Amino acid sequence: MAECIVKFVVGKLADAAVQEVLRLYSVDAQVETVSRELGRMQAFLKDADKKQITNERQKHWLKEVTDLAYSIEDVIDTFLLEVQQKPQKSTGMMGKIKRMIKNAKNLPAVRNLVDEISQIQAKLKEIEQSRLRYGINNLGEAGTEEIQLPIRPPVLPNNDPEVIGLNKDRDHIIKELLNESTKRCVVVSISGTGGLGKTTLAQKVYNSNDVKQRFGLRIWVVISQNFQQIDTLGKIIKQVDPSIDQSKLPKDKGDLLTMLDESLRGKKYLIVLDDIWKDDQWTQIGAAFPDENNGSRVLITTRFYDVAKGVDPTCEPYKLEYLTNQLSFELLFKKALPNHDPNNSAFHGLSEIMNQFVHKCGGLPLALVVVGGLLSKKPCNYNAWSKVLKTMSWHDDGKQCSEIIGTSFEDLPFALKPCFMYFAAFPEDYSIKAEELIQMWVAEGFIPQEDKRTLEETAESFLEDLVQRYQLFLHLMLYTF
Image (tube, rainbow, N blue to C red):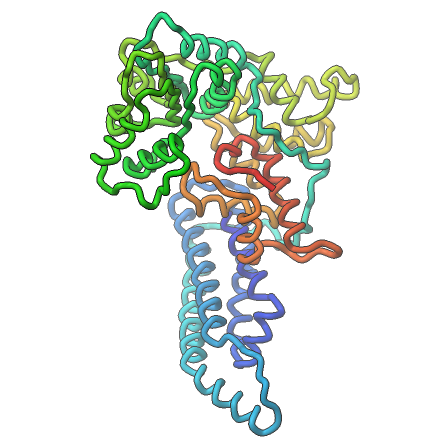
């Protein structure tokens, strides 16, 4: 990741438009020196990323380089903003005088840039010396990498979540919600470790025809770790009555609780609270759900059994289990070889290695989807897939899949890495519109110019590639072209 950041900054410094402004103020040589030093470090960063170092001193060195790269980018961006060139309408002697005046006004910005660059050069020397002390060695010169577009045509996901292995679970939850023997407002809980598909299961239940017909009002709200009581109450009220201007809602939580209670009365509702982390998250909003003995229901998903049990002690939480080997194989095949027939003899030679991936993933849907997305970008042969298998050092049979996701990230083409990391700029569970995201990527300078394609078209292909690789993250964004 550090290599990706530095490579991006080096590329930005080499941009023709940036170079033109730097040359105009005779600071291009100083910036070029910094750029060369960063370029030399890329090989070491690539080496460190491949080794996935755990040594704390070496990790600190990587952080220093990354922070310095960000600082360089900030310094250059600030300078370019301060000396932003505007078209000069005047020509001749008057035009020269105006340009001289403008250049004189920009002298403080130039001096500041020179001072900043001097400090950065000193820091670069210090970092280079610490690299030698920390023993980060070069495996070879960092080469250029061509932009790799999808090997196969991108397969856009539909709006129906993956259901492999969840049909029985879906039917059980629906039966619990529709059970008319209990008229009180029952809270049904789905619990299980991260990556088992709790949200996907809840979506299947929420969108089923039986549930739609039974409940006149259905509400879905994401809780997660960044829970804010007032914001969450406002979102629920907005779903009850879309005509309400959310900006004009009361700011007092007591008033919001009363307003929500009143808006739900007389309605048979289903409220889904996705990803509850703590007991008090339920207590802060659950009291506002009126119980009129009319068969209304609440469905929650949570990683923690104790949280699920505490929400409604009379209703046993439904524990989501890991997939069987057969279902795991089916899910992996579907993700690794989309739109292909598993009975096709051409793929029988991959069965052995696919079973090894299945064993490594340990029945965790999250891991299977990530691995499947990674394999979908590789040639369909044993040698290519075995190389992926050898590069992955997993533990606990896949129940912890952070290393799988890390390997998948490292496999990304360089041009896609900053685009993928950009998702970290948004809050957890934030809905991102594809059109707006593409515009942000272009504005940030992440998208390279390609022949016969606009920047927006290239960015769209990048997004399609990321979607195919990381379909498990789709619940974080609204993929709407």
